[in-house]
Image 1 (cartoon, helix red, strand yellow):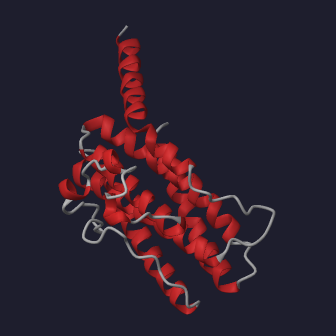
Image 2: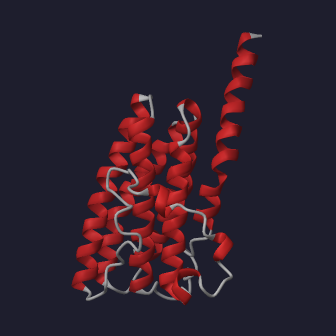
Amino acid sequence: MKNIISTLAKTAVVLLSISSFDQIALASDKQPVVQYAGKADIPLEDFIRQAKLMGMKEVQLSGVANERSTDAKIKAYAKMIIDDHTKANEELKMLAKAKNVTFPMSTLPGNLRPDGRVDSAPENMKDTTRNQNKPEAAGNSKTTGMAGTAVNEEEATLRLVEDLRKMNGSALDQAYIVAMIADHQKAIALFEEAAKSADAAVRKYASKQLPKLKAHLKQANTFNQ
């Protein structure tokens, strides 16, 4: 009976975590990381933008897990993610510079910190949806194209960071691991395509990062065993 109750309790925690954080997987699914598969090279600008946003998201979520989790193994995993993805992002920045491609900077300055904390969150997390169809909103300007996508994805990441920050204990740990599994699956798909690029520098960068991404995913899966 004890085992049954324990199993049911664990299942309830998992379901609660996934339910309260399933938007992470949905947000990841919206990233067009495999649209070039079998067709043509991923445009360099697209690869750099997507890789940068993915790395940023994983660092931010890991910052919260490293700060708030009470599980030593989760904290150690989160610290590894922060270190590895921060380094990868620096190398991505150098790749962009070598290729004379503008490295996409955060469109929400002051909010994204490498330790996963969110500065000035109350001001920047305000609900502006009520103004989204009004011409006076956002200074009569309309954000479109790649820049608009980047803004939306950064805002979504900030909201997910805040959602995770509100969680505690096993719910936080499970939600974080669900996020890491979903995000690393997408990252691996993106980098596997980039590893086939006709551009030698892109191939080299992507091929170097793939083993780490796969190791991150493998380790994340062990938390669910």
